[in-house]
Image 1 (tube, one colour):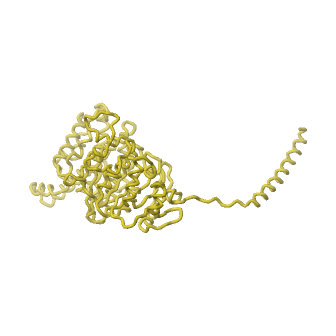
Image 2 (tube, rainbow, N blue to C red):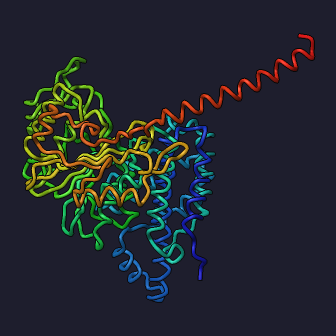
Image 3 (cartoon, rainbow, N blue to C red):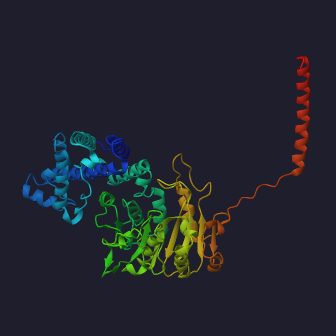
Length: 509
């Protein structure tokens, strides 16, 4: 029996494979090549093991073997496997060969993999350089990935592959800073959102800015039998491909992940109207500039294009059109319009959404007066890749029975673990936030329940320090003790000065 491979072994080999590209290509780009090849190796090793099993079971009966293979999750043939690619690693056209194999795999699995690899070009001179350099990198990549044995019997728990994929995505996000952070929400932040929205069996779960899909996977895993429907949309083509592969590697074969601009072209529709979801989670790009340009139309080249509510066929901006340079409330309104009755949504946003005025202030007031805001949670700074600014979580609910808003300030010392480059939420920090949210408990210097009247008195400003008082009073100063200490210091100083005069006289000075 083959020796089991550990999570650490796979992670180490993948990290080694990344050395092939470091210093030559930005990590926000080369991640696509490594993660795609990991996916192909996983498909190939699974196919190879099942082929061996069926060959033995059916005594080499080719017809029965092929019939059994067609019932597997993914269908391959000998010329669409990783082994075939590895055999061509020294070919001068290796990049083009890989592209053709990816296309072949798509065509053999059109129901699941249609278009998955369309945004990844292994023969791109613009990205991978001229032929000699490109071929050397691809040959090394194939050799590194070939060291992995990803057969089901060897990896044991299939989660290992999904975890490895997740591990590499997080490493790339950390390495790439802002560029990488745009497509990845740190694990514990994803876990927090998942626990706050509490998905139930048969829920539709949606992320309108799903990135690599990690947040959606976390939410789905909250339901023990995974009996939920997953929906997402992602604007970046390569990241959309990563999301689809990520879903498959986590055993989620029926997720509906669309590629396109969620604001200008939402693709999850029913009868031409926005689809409704019981649970919505998101970590949209903070304060997205020029968020409305997708509404301008191809013929409109005016750089001073002004977004108007009437331009949106789905009427999502009737509460107000957010400023051109800050798309936060555009995403919030899209999600609220996509939220089912009795639905819950949780989204990560910059603190500016809590207090900025103008059109954002008017939108915020409308949302509060319609009793849609359930809680505001302040997070520690330095949690997210590429930005050190603190963020907050806003939780919204339809058909709320109460009319107050819970404020939690989880940003203080002791509520997170400080890291050298990035701070982290620990399990106890998550539990404290979730328990406080569930119980709506008021805790001094941590949480507070504000009435609608209080929020109105604050002109609908939701800045957390207005509601949660975290001010630490300084200990009273004992003036008598200070006075005595000064007298003591003066006496000691007089002794030192007398000694100094003595030494100076001895020196004739």
